[in-house]
Amino acid sequence: MGYYGIRDDAPTGEDRAAAGHAGEATGPAGRDAGGNPATGQPVAWVGLFATKAAGRALAEQLRRWLAGRGVTAVELSGPPASGPAQGGMKGGAGPGVLGPGGPGDLPGGPGIVVSLGGDGTLLRAARVVPPGIPLLGVNLGRVGFLAEMGPEEVWEALPQVLAGRFVLDERRLLEGTAGRDAWWAVNDLAVRSGGTARLLRLRIRVDGQLAAEVAGDGVVVATATGSTAYALAAGGPAVPPDLECLVVVPLSSFSLAVRPFLVAPSRRVAVELLEGEAFVTADGQEARPLPSGGVLEAGLGGRTLRLVRRRPWPFYDVLRAKLFTTPGGGGRR
Image (cartoon, rainbow, N blue to C red; front, top):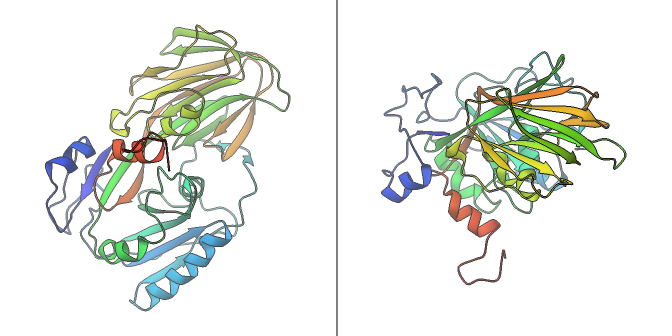
């Protein structure tokens, strides 16, 4: 994970500690570590992505607000979400593949896309937005780890964002293959039991070394970003995104000896289906069957998701506020 961009106030020591490691561009013409144009220049256009009624209503308000400021608004919303798509990303296809009936070419110049919904909406937006274009998540859902900004905050934050005063939080994507199929994911790739609740038998290897054999409902291979999603619900640890590791979490393992474990970012995880009927799912958005004897190979790739932040992301503050106890105790409120 890396942070790039400029702010109208210098980052404090607390900001740097929250960021893990940060890089600041020195001006509008700067470039970040990936060679992409750095923030600091004004935003010329804003894409609006929503899948539900509340998000679409807010998108319409934002469209009028942006028009009044001479900023081009681009409608990117697709049809309402109806569950995971059946079919993987073929041939190593990555983020930024605009589907049939999509918005076509985006305007030139620096732009961002605003995702209006929960984390699931942002994950869907990541499958529409071309690579390199930053995503700003406005949380209309329940938790919101990726879409951190509330709807009441967007009106205050957008003028600063449009002026180029924001930081970019970059998250490496998980990439996987199984036979001729290829997937990518922000959060996780999972091998899960199929239509019947029958036991799967799976073998997990890390760089060819046998790590575990699992009998259960499946296995989740998550990024540090995804550690607070499906993997956490399945009993895995919450991992700060700057750790950039993989998290392997067995699902409903029949053996109490098989526990979640971490894998270094340079290594690859292979999950072989020994017995049972299974699917590979990517971020809960796509699913495709994995035949018996099939192997999902997964690891961190070179592509990243770029998230717009008002300041370096305070992981532990967010974790405490959304999942752990509040300072006064009593759990999440």
